[in-house]
Image 1 (cartoon, one colour):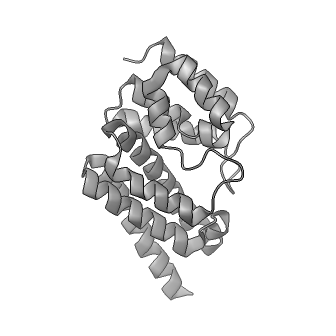
Image 2 (cartoon, rainbow, N blue to C red):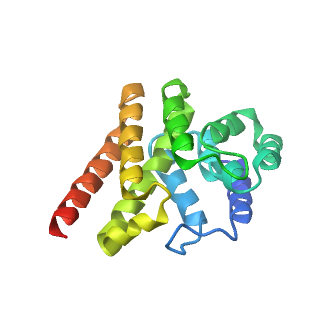
Length: 193
């Protein structure tokens, strides 16, 4: 069961990300955080993992080291460790896109089961969003992403392969299914154009 601690984290995440929206869609960012948390909970997340899912982008997007310390003070070392491991950059400006993505993929084999769960939930939510949006707006979707079409597809394929080498859990199987569908759809649409 989730305690008052989770409710506090939900309020905190809502406040931290209050002025943030999803790339290209204008959807309030909290929708992403709730979606990732829902996926994590559906795949067995405990309270620390659920709180980390709510806060997985907080360090990267909302204050770096100062936010890390606030998360540690409010929610403890375990939550902070998960959030840290889900963060691909905590500096401004961020390192180059490809460098960040390669480093993120490289850390998956050594990540804890808690990190793998929250990270896979995040990547699954993102892949589902990309697939849905691609069906609606087509090729112009790739303009939202620094890696463009090729880089984004490369990143998600590499993520799937890294997760599969580490743990072939149900969430990883679902991530692979969504990525395969996205890859097939982009090939199909490419052949139409």
